[in-house]
Image (cartoon, helix red, strand yellow):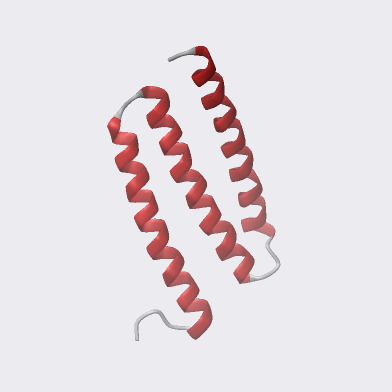
Length: 92
């Protein structure tokens, strides 16, 4: 990896970890359930980005597949939580 790419990946790691920390704080002290769902949604997006950064850093395809699984499961869980908050039930 070139020096510029390595510095960019390290900076991206730092930004993603900082974003995950902020999301975790909002998840723990969020005043409403809607804030907590939004923080959880952002947290899984950050986890997906972290897996993508690891894939770029190590050059291994398994991280990209893990990022795809995180994205799919995170999307479905966000929809389920939102539907539960709106109606009080998930299955109709």
